[in-house]
Image (cartoon, rainbow, N blue to C red; front, side, top):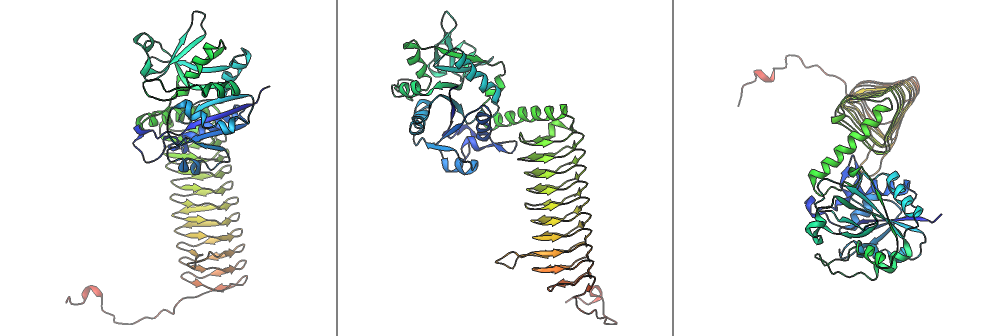
Length: 458
C-alpha cells in the first residue's frame, strides 16, 4: 500500500478574526485549531506531516511545540503556491499526500480515511472531499461532467451565475498522488480574479490529461466548518463541545449542564463521575470513576483518581489520588501529587509537592516544594518558605507531624515524625522526631493600657 503523508496549510493571517495572532492558533476547548487537524491526520495514518507557516509562523511553531516538518510561505500567493513551498520535503516522499487546512478542527480521521480509500479504490490521481450546503457562498463549486466525474472546481469569485447555484462544494481537503501533483503545481499561473496560484487549477490540468479524479461526499458539512471570525469560532466550539459532552454521557458520565461544561477532546472520564456546571477540563486529563468535579472548576493536564471531589478549584499538571477532597477555592499547581484520603481545603495553594495518605491541608495555607508524609496535619495559615530570592528549597514533613496554625517553615528544613510545631512559630532548623518546636516572642502584658479609641484626636 502506498505511503500516506500530509501537508497542512497554516500560513494565513485570518484578518476577519481581527487578531494579532495567526488564526490557526486560536483555541477551541483549550486546544489550538491547528492541533485538531494534526491529530486527525496522524490518526488517519499520515506518517509524515508538513505544516506550511507564514504570518507570524514563529508563534505557530512555538504553540504546537511538536517535532514536525515546517516550511515557510513568505508571501501568501495562493493555495497552490503554499503546497509548492513544501516541494523540498515532498520531493523526497512517495505515495499519497493529504492536503488539509489548519482551520478545520472538526474534520474526523474516519472521513479522511474514506477520502483516501475513494482515491485508491478507483485508481485516481487525486480525490476531493465534497459536501452539500444550503448556502454555498464563499465555497468553490464542484462541476461534474455528464458521467458524474469531477470536471472542474470553480472558485466562488470566478463562478458564473449558473455555477454559483451549485450546492455541492469543495471542502479544500484533497488526496493527491505526490509526483503528478508536483509536476502540475509547476504549471500553475495566477490568471484569476485574485491573482493567485490556485491549487484547484491542478484539477484542470489532470482533466486535460485525461487522468481520473475521485470524490468522496460527506453528509456532515459541519466537519469542514472553518471559523473565519469570532462568532464562527464560538459556533465551532459550541458544536464540538456538545459532541464531546454527548459522547461522555452515553459512556456513563453525568454532565449536569452540557451547555455550561467545556471538556477537551483528549480528556478521558470514568463512569459514574459527575461534572457540575461551569467546569472546564482540558489537555491530557484523565478522571477516574465516581468523582465529582465542579461546580466552577478548571482541570488541565492532570490525573484525578477514583472517588475524588474537586469543588470551585483549579488543578493544573497534578496527580490527585483516590478518595481526595479538594476545595473550595484551592489552587493545585504543576508537580503536585497526593496519595489516598488527602484533604486539600479552602484557599490552599500547592505546588511541586507530594502529600502522603491521610494528610490534611485544610485551609489558608501555601505548601510549595515540599514532601509531606502520611497523616500530617497542616494548621491554617501555614506556609513553606521555599524561595530565598534566588533558589528554591525543599521542606520535608514526616509521618504524623502536627503543624500548628500560622507557622512559617523556612526551607530547607525537616520536621521529624510525630513532631509538633507550635502555632505562630517560624521554624528555621530541623525538628527531631516526637518533639515540640516553639519559636515565637514571649507574650507581655502591660496593665492599664488606654484604648486607642479613647485617646484624644490630634
